Length: 99
Image 1: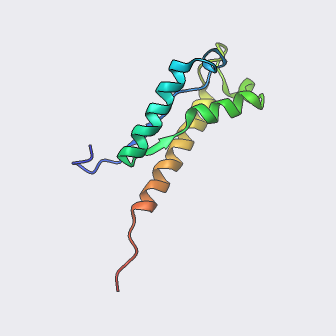
Image 2: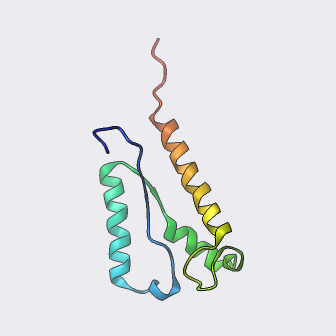
Image 3: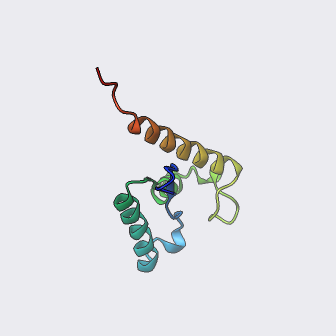
């Protein structure tokens, strides 16, 4: 993907109270963050976003009944969050004009 200059966004793991104390889950989450940083690609901190939703009880409007997956509105919000990350990445790539 790098060789073909394809913009890439890595989306992290989702938050779930079931996994909030699982060291292996955190190890995977941390590995994803390290890969994104090492490869200089955009990383969407989905875990943090979903934890914020759950802690602020917004999950009733954004989460599916299984309290693990997002519902349609939740996925729309996540898609908008990812779209913003892509747009910011595109502007960050722009170079100032040379005189």
